[in-house]
Length: 169
Image: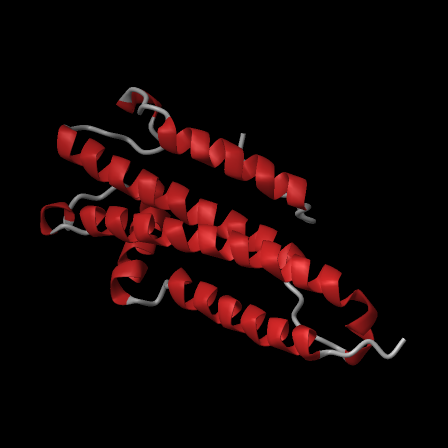
C-alpha cells in the first residue's frame, strides 16, 4: 500500500504514514512471505529487526516530506501581509518534524538490535540495503536526528523573522 509519487502531495504522505503505522502494529506474517530467504530462526529475528527499523525510517521520510510542504525556507519582507498564515504553516511543519524525531528513537532501538554481534555474519542478500542502513546508523553516517534538528532551528529562525515583521501594506 506504501507508494511514492514523482510529485508527493500532502495527501500522499498522509496516506503512506497511515499504512506504515498499520504495518508497525500488524503481527508478522509467516517467514515464507518475507522479502528475503529465511532458513532459520536467527535469520528471522534479524529480518524482523531490520524490517522494523526500515519501516520507522520510511515514517521519518514521510513526515519530512509532509513537513517540507509547510516549511517556509525564507521569511521575505514581502511576506509581511501573510505573516499569520506563514506562522501557522511553520507550526504545522514543526509538528511534522517533531513526529519524525519520535520515530528516530525507534529507528535507533531497532538498528541496535539488528547490529548485535550475534547477527554480524548473518547474510540476508535480498534486504542488504536494510543491513546497510543499520550499519550507516551505527557509524553515524545516516542520522536523521541531525537533519530534523537543523530543520527545527530553521523554523525557529524564520518564526522569529515573521514575528518581527511589520505590515507595511
